[in-house]
Image (cartoon, rainbow over all chains, first blue to last red; front, side, top):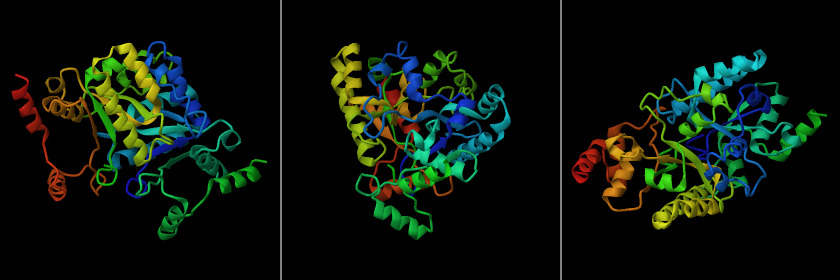
Length: 187
Length: 187
C-alpha cells in the first residue's frame, strides 16, 4: 500500500464496532468542544467537496509500536485492531473500551474511518463500500485501505488502476458493482 | 517525499505560530475533554517509547483541495500554510485565527507538529530540529518532513540514508550537528 498506493493508509470499521469502542467521529467531537477550542470553529469542515461529513475518527498506534509510522508498526496496529474487533463482538461496551486502551494509544499514525450507520443506504464512500463487502462475506467489519496516486499529482485514473490490478492479479471492483451486490443482498 | 520517503508527510511549526493560531497539542486537547469522551482516557499516550509527549496537533486540508490526499492537494495545503504563517507574523491572534479558518478545514490529511517552546533546549525531536534550523536561517518557522522507510519494514538505516542523500545531491545532517550549531547560535 505504501509503495504502490501512496495515499493515506487507514482503517475502516463498522458503526457498531465504533459504538462498542466509544470511538467518535472527529467532526462530532470537535463540534462538542469548540467553545473550549475556538480554532475548531474556524476550521469547521462545512465545505468538503465530495461529501457532507468527514468519516475520520481518532488516529491510533498499538502500544507495542515504537514511532508508529514504519511498515512493521502500522501493520501491527492494523492487525491487532482487527483482532480486537473480532474479540469484542460478544463483550460489553465497558470492557471493550478497556481492552482497546490496554493495547492502543492516541494520537497515533493510523487513522480510523467509521462507516455510516446504514452503510451504502446512507453514504457511498470507500469506508461504506469496504464494510459492506465484509458484511456480505460474513467477515469481521474491519478493513484497511489506501488511495492509489498517479505520477501527475492526482489520483491514479481508472484505466491505469485496472491495468495495475491485472498486472498484480488483484480483483478490480468499482463502487457501482458493490452497490449493486449490496442492494440485492440487503433486500 | 511520498515515493522516496514513505512515512508520514507532515508540517512542523514553532510554538509561537501555534499560539497565534490557537492550535493545541492533541494530547492536551484530549486530556481536557476526556470526561465527555472517556475513550480518550483509555487511549492516553503515557507510554511513548521515544518521548514523554506527542507533538501532534490537528490534521488540516486547504479548503481548495478535493480529497486532500493527492500530491497536488497535500502540496497546496502545506504551501498555503507556510504562506499564512508568514502573513500572520505581525497580525493579532483573533484575526490570525479567522484567516486560518477561511483557508483551512479540519479534520484533514496533513498533520501539524508543534515544536516545544524552548526548541532544542527542551526536546530534540525532528520538529525542534527543523524549526531550530529555520530560526538560525532567519526563515519562517514552518517546515515539512517525512520519515524515510527501508525495505525491511523499519526506518531506513543511517548509511543508506546517507547514500540516498549523496545520490540526490541533498545535504545530509544529523541531529547532533544541528544541536551543536544551535548551542553556539543561541548563546
